[in-house]
Image (cartoon, rainbow, N blue to C red; front, top):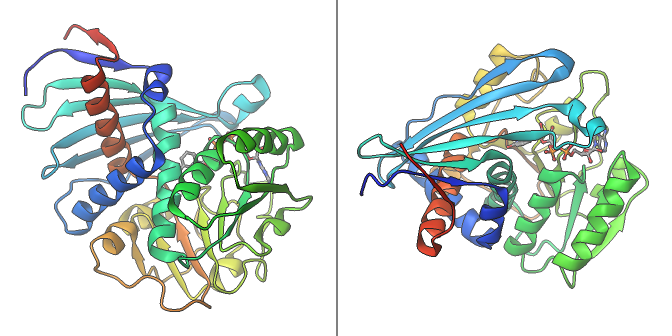
Length: 328
Ligand SMILES: NC(=O)c1ccc[n+]([C@@H]2O[C@H](COP(=O)([O-])OP(=O)(O)OC[C@H]3O[C@@H](n4cnc5c(N)ncnc54)[C@H](O)[C@@H]3O)[C@@H](O)[C@H]2O)c1
């Protein structure tokens, strides 16, 4: 590959490429299969905790077989909501995997949303019943919306979404956007958090993390046969709710254990992790065994997902001549 400078891709440039959710889900699937087979270098993400519950993370991955190498610097500032700013922002830097030369700088917020949503759809690919027609969503923010977009592409039978947000305007905004983006899918706003799980075959949670608020979803809420996908660590589901699931999966077992060992969260998750998305994608562990079991998947977010999504975006941008070239 030529050493042809750095391409800068901002949010508008990335969104303008029109990359569909199925492409992102398939890119994650391939990257995680490579990881499951053991060929990927991906240390657990590093977290920096600051004031007002803000935290920043460094996520890095190297996928030698698919030639992807990069790092994401992501900032999560919950207090941004009150300032009218996105909670999540950051940058992804890609390097040429054969020379190490810098290739691209991409907006990290949109990459994060696209890959986080795709991670929920990938969990559904391996762990949900194939005929799910209703999805529950708790937290109608950036990650929640991206998850429903990706799930709508993954679950061909999806007919309805039951959602709730602590801020009614956020739920109303989600309904308005979904009506335009997801024709044929009815969106129902629920008045209580637990109501999102009623009749839902997949329940995605993406609420703001807080140490002060007890998880709003307790045991007995997830219906038999349903899959819970938690994108918000242990903020949404109680320990009892996680424990009542037949098996507990995650996106990366090593990262989950490291996060629990070195931080304030995840101390109530089950002791046994049945497998992770890489192992599921590589066929190394079993997914759903029957239609009646409740399953849980905890997706903390992986560097592999960021890097393969950014690489997909870079390839498409090069094809289309999109982006701002920067000198090295
Ligand atoms: N797993 C991952 O890969 C990943 C990636 C990015 C962000 N996150 C996490 O996902 C969560 C959502 O991130 P986001 O970017 O969508 O944030 P966001 O601020 O856009 O959305 C969060 C939404 O949750 C709502 N909310 C907060 N507390 C609630 C509660 N108790 N009940 C119902 N609704 C509630 C807020 O009103 C808001 O609409 C955060 O916890 C964030 O740290 C995870």
